[in-house]
Amino acid sequence: MNLLRKLLFPFAILYGLITSIRNFLYDQGILKSYSFDIPIIAVGNLSVGGTGKTPQIEYLIRLLSHQYKVATLSRGYKRQSEGFILADGTTNAAILGDEPFQFFQKFPTIQVAVDANRKNGIEQLLSQSNTPEVILLDDAFQHRKVKAGFYILLTSFGDLYSDDFMLPTGNLRESRSGAKRAAVVVVTKCPSDLSPDAQNSIREKLKLASNQELFFTSIIYDDFVYSVNKKLSVAELKGINPILLAGIAKPKPFFDYLKSDAAQQDFLTFPDHHHFTDKDLSDIKNKAKNRIIVTTEKDYVRLQDSVLSEQLYYLPIRSRFVTGGANFDRTLLHYVSKSSFKF
View 1 (cartoon, rainbow, N blue to C red):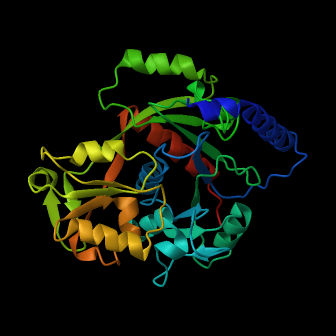
View 2 (view 1 turned 120 degrees about the vertical axis):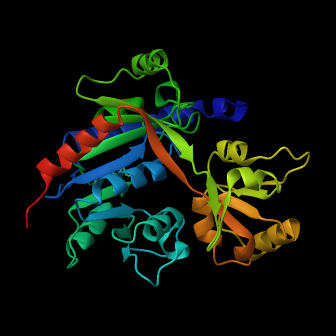
């Protein structure tokens, strides 16, 4: 924790008090929450950024979309639009936001919508002629105006919420007690060989209630990187020393997976959800010359139509359960099947 964050400790206490009062008002029904007669699954975290929400949402899409009509609803962080938007052939990353547009491109059979007002977004989705049967709320753990039927709380292996503190001293958006709203807690970004002893140690730290389930996942990187019409193996890629570019919260694992043995390799880092300006693109182009540029999937959807497109590749990732994946699937499918509203 740096000195500035320590100095801001009084503001963290004040922020924690404000969020606690807000949660109390919702818990007591003084502030109204709205429920809907459809399975709604909210995925989120207690901390800001970097817990792996996107691969977790994609996991749920793959799990549910074979049996149900699925819709995702996101705020559309840093999008250049307002209000409710349902993705179609005219939308792009600027209109939807990078993560929703990624969902739209990868999963053409689902509906992808954005609205900062989740209540209005759900109502708009339910008014469509092609009514969804399940709605996935992306990054909505603190959006108390809507009461989801099932909450999934994510926390990173290297940055557990139990070890964190309120903003601005720490990274928590609300008190650790907010975890009690979760039916399931998923510890993300774990080593793929996380031992049972290490899992039990984390379980003791989190101190979950008896009705809460705990799971552990790791991030799995693809063996290939992809352009609009080509692919290269990661092994082949490392031999040609590409430029690596990332505009995500925690890019180190991405860089570590792709870095080559070259004495000099270019790593270009930008803020999370960065809006690439013409100058940014020109600088990247001049630095790359004719070399391949490899970026994250989230960055690719913002860069795929830019001047970098002909030399741009992306690396897909997936969330994989260390253990207990079948139990997680059964828990989610059971919730959806018993909560489905029959029209």
